[in-house]
Length: 305
Ligand SMILES: NC(=O)c1ccc[n+]([C@@H]2O[C@H](COP(=O)([O-])OP(=O)(O)OC[C@H]3O[C@@H](n4cnc5c(N)ncnc54)[C@H](OP(=O)(O)O)[C@@H]3O)[C@@H](O)[C@H]2O)c1
Image: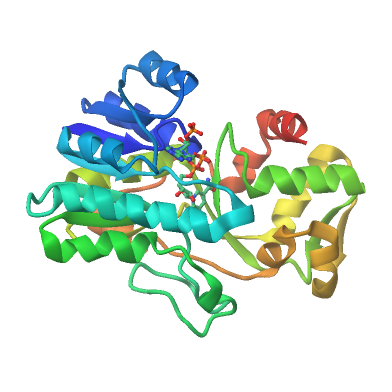
């Protein structure tokens, strides 16, 4: 297939376009800068200049393709509502081009808001009683799946908590930097809270399978580890940095970890059993703890400190 990929230069999108090209697909990658253009050309992708807020560029990219994978997102947490609006408009634009054609649209989605402690499956949808649910403005999943009834083979790939691997700039490097700065590797409460994760290459493989064969309306879980206890994450970080690993009262998580404290405190396991059964996807890359033990995590965290 000729696949239009947004976010093709991102952490997950760049792994996805490699996966697509290795499997024999052609990639048309959205690029908004000369640097992005050079990155795409270097891996053998065609370049489509544009941006998420340039809707004509999204229309022409989708129109030129047999399918679309949307992984771009404006990760500006100072104006998250606006980032979510941009995302929603982009998905609506891409979906409208594909409507009536049965072509695939695969969209990266965040975590549905659910009550803590519940093992989230592909059958679960957002629980509006969950803490903070009403404030979550991201509607990638609902927007994408609304095109199922409009002749699009629409699916979403839910990425739960940490997508890890070389180049990760997310929560895990943040935790490493906090431990380095504070001189202790802490975990909230008894540290049994479960943190789901997936390796970026396994996630990329799932994006490809979704493009090729996911039935319309599929909610897919890119989950390799159902839930790693957070004290084990803190344990590897402490050992690698040579700092003590300590338990912290949950009430102090906010002051110790900043914005990540509430996330680190929540038990939010997730399953990918149904995804594995339905698409034959099986994570084969190292899990979070083995990956976190790699030298590159500690070099990367230093670079980003
Ligand atoms: N990584 C995780 O642990 C994780 C966890 C849960 C959910 N997710 C979701 O998975 C998706 C991919 O995440 P990621 O980690 O790969 O993100 P990322 O590394 O930050 O990449 C974001 C991509 O979006 C592009 N982009 C940003 N603003 C744009 C704009 N205005 N116009 C066009 N392109 C734009 C970036 O292009 P440039 O290269 O030009 O900046 C980049 O290719 C996102 O929806 C994210 O929220 C990720």
